[in-house]
Image 1 (spheres, rainbow, N blue to C red):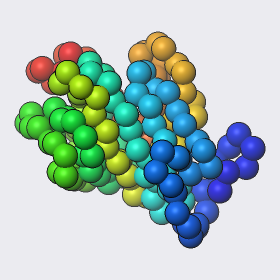
Image 2: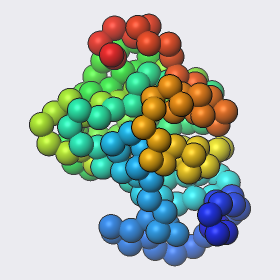
Image 3: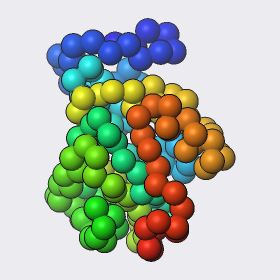
Length: 160
């Protein structure tokens, strides 16, 4: 549920989130990515992403959430627990809680995907805090307060 400027987690609401819209019209800009909330509840959180060339999310861990990515357009280069792989349109990436992972758009065109985590945890609230931040160090600090732990730079070859 959306109450003013704060997302309040409750049961999953029924209904349809239309193409090109986010649930509650919630849109975030996080370090060059655009995220649209598609479903927000206490049990899960789904969001669509637009990832321009050269953007990515460095290696991190969700200690309390399983995460999934369903690639809609483009190709992601992914770090999954020590291995680099690629996923393209129609592929679904599964990342159990505690698995170190990262994703990047290292191609020439935009990439789009549907992401979701379960349980929802504090990820939607984290995006509220990260919206329009430009300092990566501040993103790491705030993320740690919302159950997303970034690995120290230099610990994953090819991530920097």
